[in-house]
Length: 277
Image 1 (cartoon, helix red, strand yellow):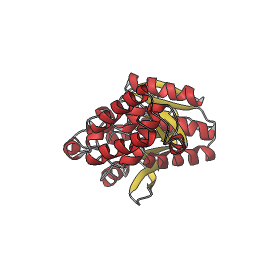
Image 2: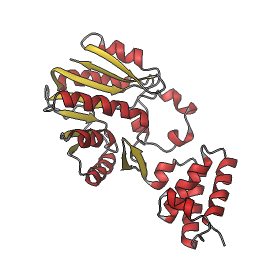
Image 3: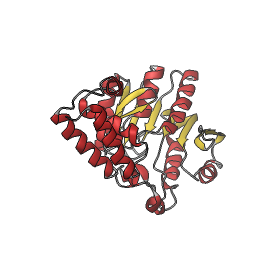
């Protein structure tokens, strides 16, 4: 008889031996997914026998994690800004650091309740949906990937959020001087950095959402040029910053943009840059 407790011990040991981060927590998440329960259930039912079906699924999930598949893609969920979002390989997994961008956007909208807002490169819709749910505002959201937009729409329905999705390559489908606020977590990884990235990221997350060209600044450049046309006079631009991108982005903004501010994350790294036209 294989109990929940034994399954957890064996799973955690297997993951630890393969140097998978946080092996015990990962084993708990994967087993809870296999049993269709939350993790708290596992704590109180350690002596319960695991069904054959659950054991088969659990074994498959462990094997997938050993192949560097992110836990979020195995379970199909990721927590972000207090909500659960569906994720697949069509979208980037939302990171806690991106919540700083959400907070900046919420702060702007509360001061400008009638603002017309667009989230560029929305992916799972986590930014747009979080902002919409927190403010009650209708948010526009776009992505070049139709598959990503399908994920975003699924999340919109789950959270009953006031978000309108549309397909487009950055700001090419946006009318001039039509927006008050543009927010984006754009691709910003230089192509040369791929070799040094974690396998979970490099081999599983969508390349179009990660890589931005040789320098990592290429999408920022296009985004900033497009924003200068799409925003109304006095409009605001907010973007997540990548590693080592601050100075390059700030140099791009210097000629036309004012009130440039940098928001650090909890590690005191520059995470979000905001500015006005």
